[in-house]
Image (cartoon, rainbow, N blue to C red; front, side, top):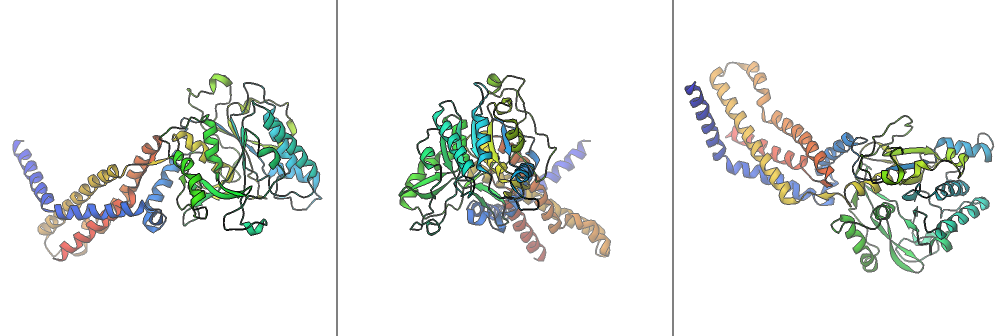
Length: 488
């Protein structure tokens, strides 16, 4: 038995000498991956083909955790202006066969807000996001506009009403009778109320996409002209996060930097576009036409249970047809609102407000939900893993790559010496698993799923990083060096 161990020990010593002899090769392998890592930290390269492996890695992680991971955040309720709601409105206002309007009737919005505002003490929504641009003109809906104006005024006057954040769109100045190069907010029928309301805010809802049109980041703010001066119009999700946290945003939260620097940047360089926004922490899904989906329950320590009671709906996400809520009226049960982030938005096919996300094609209202609640569960935004830690991880993997290629080379040489030159294609088939190209593909596959596993862990703590692309770069460098050695 001792002789077996001596042989094993001798083999390991020989392998160690080989690896030590190849340290310049291991260094080149590591440096190749490190160059890729440094490059893809730049948004220009990250959005290119160089960042494709890591985007795929992040997408896999998001898909594996969607509707499974809940995190420490408040539940979401979507009051859905769905196809059924649009059909219900069309049956009252349109002749059969006529196309419905893409603009939500202001009377419907007023009824939904009145229902939320009528919630008794202890059953109020925590924050409300209105994903409808009410500043858009709605000719012929004078009664609805007057009704909505009255509800906004009641909301602004109610000290117990939850924070209301309304989506707003800025336009090139020449389209709205303005001048200059900075986008301008058009006037709305509700400015007289909202501009002075202590609990109603405008917010933008733009997303930044990659080269494939996938919404990966939210635009944190947009510099706009309003009332004769330039100011930042913050993302609705950022404002909602601040309200959900009652203003108690962590000093280390990444979103603090956007809030702190936006006013100065809009004064100094209002025309400068933001190329790299705030990453959206996707964890909730709602595919188009999905009707029977079930979402996980909130953790037992959710603080809202103290207010809403243990018999409240525990689901992290719910959606109700806006038409059903409108028909029920303001006196309907408000239990479903209790301590929830309520979003009024649409999944109807007339407005067609859908975006490509890492999960699937998703309603814009769900992108908002992931944006706002994602900030909660990541404690103010996803942070990139520190570069030294990413380099350390890459270094360990690079050593493993060089070691595996060294072992495969020794195995190929040993087999060929034993079998001789006359074994032909059978020998090459047997050696195929040890071929550098095959090893390279294996390394890429392992790196992807190792990266996904590490990303799933990191996302739970609000972190993300790069691994797959740099490892592929290291493996390619090792393969090239292996082929060069074979030729010499």
